[in-house]
Image (cartoon, rainbow, N blue to C red; front, side, top):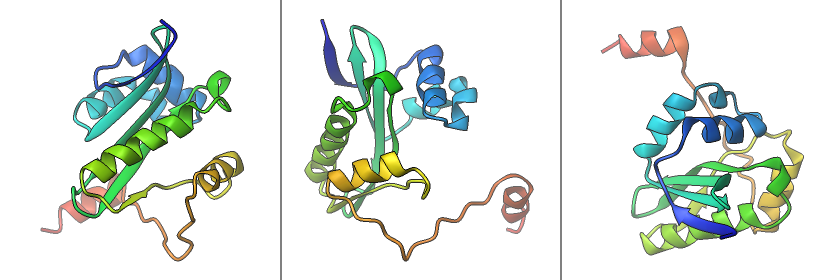
Length: 146
């Protein structure tokens, strides 16, 4: 069968755990939550090599302006073969078809291989933006201030 790219939202927890942990994502420790999150996600693409999950990409959009890529992961042994680029291109095509004028994502500032990859596909860094996050007790406190 070889390599195929498909829209998919139903994943085995074990394959999600392998993929996410291979990329150093702490969320890989919670494969049940990942599986549930992906089932409810905007659009998700999988790259499968003879059935094995080799890569995954997922995005959400507002259908008008912006599609936000939250997931773009490829197993280490498949990197450098164009799998990530094709997943990102397919996300871009879906975003354009849905009417979005831009595709955005976040990247850790120390992740040089990913930064180089993103620049290779024409992306530019938005240095003027800072990401904010509320978690744990701060999130509970914020939620209780209604």
